[in-house]
Length: 634
Image (cartoon, rainbow, N blue to C red; front, side, top):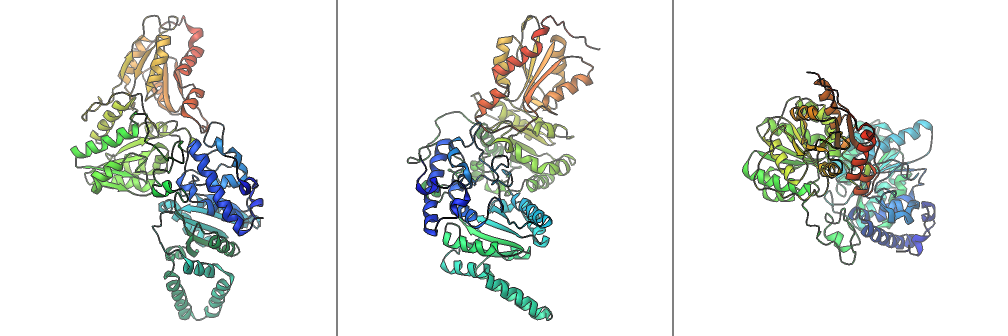
């Protein structure tokens, strides 16, 4: 779609500031249409971005960006911001390989003040920027835009607690898009918000403090009267207690309310807090009716809306969701925990069937892990469904509150490995390295859908912490056996046995961890290599490892995780401990932050598809075709 008249003239926020109020309203219509058109073509986050159109316009109209800093929380609602800051014509490349990111990135634009993608970081970052400006003597504003969901995280409240006493000139904008905090949005509320944010009110407030400071009882009475008066129209007492001047709630789609209120707050000193109410999916009826469904859609026709996927393949997330219900029906000790990822982790049916055993703790990964520990202490069997990238936020709790006490908690790690369009912030690249170094923790990497179900059962049966890692999307299409049969604990299997010749006489064994088994099998057919489905990263099947070492000239390890400290490292450590001198070629994710893009293309670029594995083996061992069987001590 070619940009329409007003939007096509906006190359930067400076152009935006020259528009009249009525033109800004028309711009909002065009901007919302541009978001819908592009996201429906590329896929991405839709509901949240349709809800922040007017808010984005008002922020860039009122504040002198990029001199003033805007810090967006999570960042998946920044598409309007990107369009208004010089990236309008690049929107067709959104989340594509080589295109613009779906989140703010400092290396993408000077208007992206802080890179985000995990929630609840905005207030901390904006506070740091505000105090940096104060130290440097610079006259600039810092604004944090945070959603009501992100406000459930402890980090947000830690930052509020610090910000209220730090004396920084900053504004926190709470984008309440669920209308769960307070619904009073209207003309009277708009009037009070403008009054409370204005200079007259501020001057009167400070003047009263000055007059009454020598009469503490009267000052306290005035303070309480003000709180009660504001409390009648605004639920801001908690934010006032943190030391912020609270204003709102106001309609986040009403530019006539947003702009003057923000202008008033911009000109005030100290920590300010503005509560705006928006609607996810605003302006697109289908998304308004079902904002969850349209949260992160794949490409679709806006006129028809989303259709049910016709792929027919069962995803790993669905495997987990089905297993969770089946195991809960069999064992009443099972309780399930999610940090605000019910749909993403496949727990909708579980919540419906077992509501008393379902706990959504909000965006609070640290709490989720320790909460699971408390449940486990009382004899229950907690299953924490969490993305690999988000478990990183609960790492201290994993060590101190779960592992040291050896509590039987199962961690179902979704999105392990390369996730694709969400990019570096969401890749599950590090869980192998950071879990296998923790005493008493086990880690399983099933190769397909059926093994995933079996691995979860195996994990649930243990009396110590166990994590099961599985990727985003569908697997190889392996049929899922009924029942709750576990994998043999700590045991891998040989899936393909090489002949005596192999690649020019060299006998190679490929040790595959997780779904890359299937790419390894395809490569092995070309090279006549042995392939072992290792399944367990910890405990590693050392018996299988040493048996293969006696009959093979070299090992190749394949994993969808970081190479440093990964499964390949575990294999080399085990060989060294056994005194085995065998060359090992580890293949996995490199020591760099991976870009966003199509996961199939990314895996090919990384050399982790069948062709890449084959080429890496030939490059490493092709000149050693006459290598004899290695010497082995003992």
